[in-house]
Amino acid sequence: MKRVEVKLGLPVVAPLLDVIKRTVDDLNGHLAVPQSLQDLDEELGAAWKGELLDGQNKDCRRFLALFDSEFFVSGMVVFDDDNAESVLRACAAIRLRLRQRDLEGLPDDVLEGAGVDVAKLDEAGQKSYMCYVFLATLQELIIQHLDAAILEG
Figure (cartoon, rainbow, N blue to C red):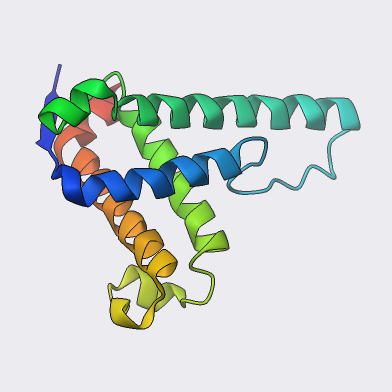
């Protein structure tokens, strides 16, 4: 089983966790990517949406669990075959919500190309952008180091 341990700087990550938790709370009961269920009957659509929400909520809880009391002692988070997919999905959901809610004024090419002038953003925008980049970096790290394990699983 592949395992990646990452030591994170607490002074940098702690403020981002506040943004992440707020965003996860905002996602509660809402899909990161709203689904068009008009082609499904009402009961089937509700069941499908319920399953998607349940999965998204589980992924987000699993991701947040990485930042437990042990994290605040050691600064370490661990990614492995058991949590990698959930963490990837949670990061994606959180990034999508940040994009929709806090970073909507930034064009995609600027946001994804790291062309954001952080100094021009207000404090909340700066934290949201830094959180967006942090989550993207975690996704890249997981894909780079655990990709084969994810694809085989």
